[in-house]
Structures are given as C-alpha cells and as structure tokens.
Length: 142
Image: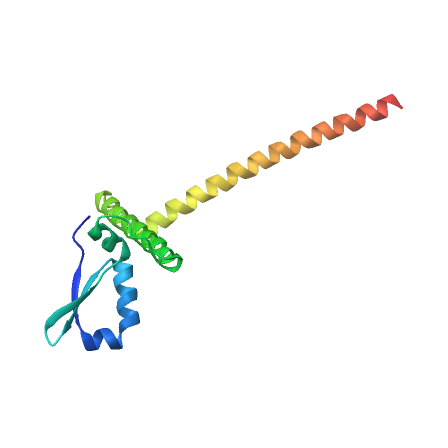
C-alpha cells in the first residue's frame, strides 16, 4: 500500500463540512486527522485502509458491506488513474500539431468508410446475381 495523503482538520471544520470531508477522503483515499484545540483526537480513513490496519476483514453489517464495495470500486478507479498516468508519462510525445492529427484521423475514417461501402456493394451484387440467377431458372422451367 502506498503512503496515503494525510490532512489535518479542526473539529469545527469537521463538524461543519463533514459530508464534503467524507466524500473527499473517500474519493482520494485520504486520511484525515481531526484536532480539537490543536490536539489530534480522531482519524477518518477509508474502510479498506481500516481493514488493513486491523489485519483482517472486519465483520460488518450489510450497509457497511455496501460501503466497503464502494470503497473497493473507488480504489480500483484510483489504481486505474495511477496506471493511466504512468502509461501517459511513458508515451512518446507527438510533435505534430492538432490540425495534422485531425487530418490524419479524418483520412483513416474516410478510408474505413470507403472499404465498408465496397464490401456492402460486393455483398449486394452477390445477392442480386444469386436472386437473378434463381429467377431466370424459374422462367426457364416454365
């Protein structure tokens, strides 16, 4: 587990902004230390971190299981964001300007559309020739 961000908030701030603090802490896996008169009195941390701290999954009632599942999903999103950040950092930088990239993308889209149109035309011709051949055989039998 990587070291979490730790933020210190006053008890007054924690009281007045509790919902926002919880949401922010949950979304960013942030540990919050609540101080009263400059003395740390409580900590608020994500459920997954708490379970890791106590060494085993804690038996939790059903509503808390939902929170735990949401916490796991949030952790997965954070892991994905971290992964994407690493991938983007390793990607080579493109020196082409945006207009050149747009032009290239449009050319590729046009080529794919032309290829699809050719395929559809060939399928249509094949279907038409099979149908025409079938009808001409019926006329020949009459």
